[in-house]
Length: 315
Image 1 (cartoon, rainbow, N blue to C red):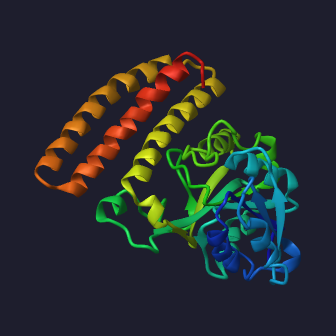
Image 2: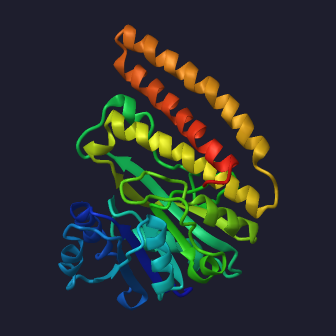
Image 3: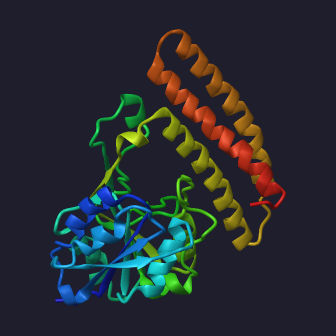
């Protein structure tokens, strides 16, 4: 039987002690040899009881280690974990995920059966759940990753979520880790953090696999189902897409100007079009459809905000 790898599970967290408690309840009971597993909780300046929550699991089968990272931002926390990790594989997860006891073993199977070391990363399934309920119009924006039905390689257009994503530690270190210009920072919902590492991994000749049986539930509390939050997430996600595209073009030695100008023009039309759709649906009392259109209009506003900044080199 191939040997199991040494694994570090890294969970960046900011001010979410209650959710972290639930995540640690699953992480610390994994069916994985204790001498091959470490769990790092990267506390990113949390003012709540995060340190006490980690300490409360000190007698668990896999006790976690608390690390305090003062530079604000999820990717600073991820890079700190990368520097500290003792495992040959580093697994990143969110502080609000739930999993069964076989999750880690399932996630490691592609690495275990990869004698030629072609696989650089493995993503598990991420299924959104809504413990406080969810309006239908919000639920339509969410769904499982479902990158493929069976375990195997993903194609280049697929970028898995960092909520359930494992890398070969040394490969990720060699490729420069995580870009601190993107990713969540405090209350800012600035996503797209996975794009850079996955893109560099593939460019270096490594495969990115998907393991659907290594599934986690990603909890979406009531605060993430409000119109205010969904609009902000859409706006920030558009900004992060622009920043990520500019970074990719810079890495590959080409200009982003054509892309930025075409996106700017296209999103003026989208902003106006979806704005009109939102207004019409409001007038005919279709509130869910109006909110969905408003969110799409607001996403276009994110593009229109970020593109001039990127064109003039301000971000």
